[in-house]
Image 1 (cartoon, rainbow, N blue to C red):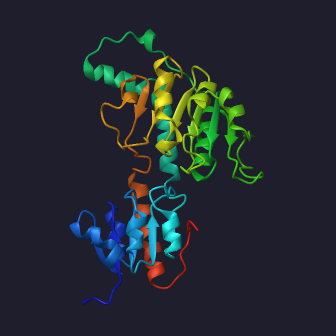
Image 2 (spheres, helix red, strand yellow):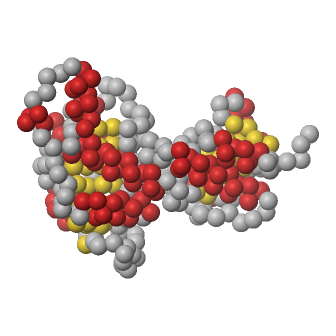
Length: 315
């Protein structure tokens, strides 16, 4: 019987991280059916999006560390982990560039009708180009909600590529943050929303941020504004968004995330709208990010199992 610790990998990770883990531990990988035994048998856990519940944590007999790829922790019951003394670590900044690039790509796909034209060409639809005019982003006002690693990265891209004016909203950041980024800080959300040509969301889902943008908030935005969400679906009230967009409010929306199911079912109401562009929670889906994140998650788990203190913990 092996004397090595056991690491359970609950989701698909890039092979480089799994191989690193195997150099130091016995590894059980998804989709191996034994993966469901992790609460009883794991010493360390690597996870991406698989939910970790209070019930599972209550059965975690030997787990010394759970490491989550990325920064969002809404899929893990943190209170249960804290009460059982299991540290939850993460990998801040590992996918910042990739997520920011996708946010920019979604925005340009919406503003320049890239996805709409592609759909029409593939379907053989008649295209009357003046009926599908795009928006130019040069010099426009971009609102960034959440100015962490990803938010600051996308702000720099909008400034560097398009000379946009950045309005930043982040009530949890120190006042002297982002000194290297030209911006105007706006502390009240209702003061920011009416001013932006494009709003991009880069914040975690918490009880406070759930449905941060509901009917009243969305109604405050310009009729021709663009909304981009590459963070968490629960930040937006999707029913309110559909209702307002059905009435012609907002120029378009780009969504990498949805509240109930990712990717959403094909009959999701928002998918019936021609000015909604979607991706399947693919913000971190680059080769470079998957190599970095897989390696970092594995190394953080290994370090704890070798007696080092956890880093980037949630509490």
